[in-house]
Length: 281
Image (cartoon, rainbow, N blue to C red; front, side, top):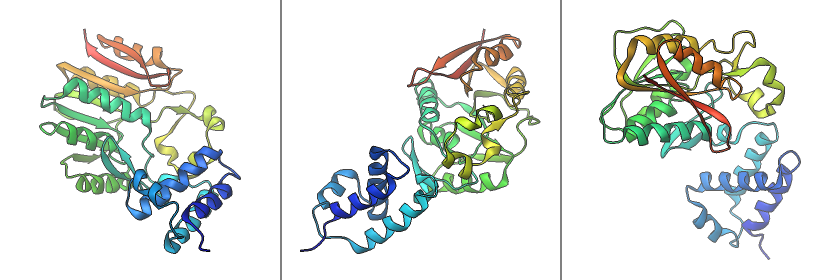
């Protein structure tokens, strides 16, 4: 009697349950299988009671060993879907989060059908500028990052998704240009060093600290220059969209209020203060 795929999946799920919750372990196995086979969940479910796919089993076994070393699933697979875009990721860039996708959705709803001039600070994988360029096809998008390695994968992702983004290697803290922008967007580093102990091992070991952490003594290090840039370069009817540290909504808003702007703190899908949206008064 042949072994079925369902039995194999259960075996690797149990293996992963040594460090992951049961439902998360199950989801990891299914995601690995979907990626390897290039099919969606409904098609995968139809294969559960078929005889073992040996090549698939080997792939899941090797991948599970990497997951047991706390390597993120997105790195094992090598990509993630973000707002309908296929985004490649590696340890040089931050893995896109659902909250960032939520911010992008807000921007697209605000600007659909328009042709905004957009600048993004902190490119990373390119998920923000690429998804905006794809959903707002008449926009002009520029994206700035200090990391040449991050820009390399961002350019690859732009090509993969068939969009045109002007990537610029520069330190956002010192960046300046003569342009006027309708949208200024950023998900800059905002996790304070003292919060590291609250983060999972797979984040601390495998994602770039440069894109995550700021010194407790200067937690708004990246927001201060964005506020200064916006005071010079935000168009009259434009808006600034920022992801923020949930503890610093008031302080972030005050940076823009001091520049004569209205800043609104908004919550994410989990009810946490996560965004600031800024417009001229």
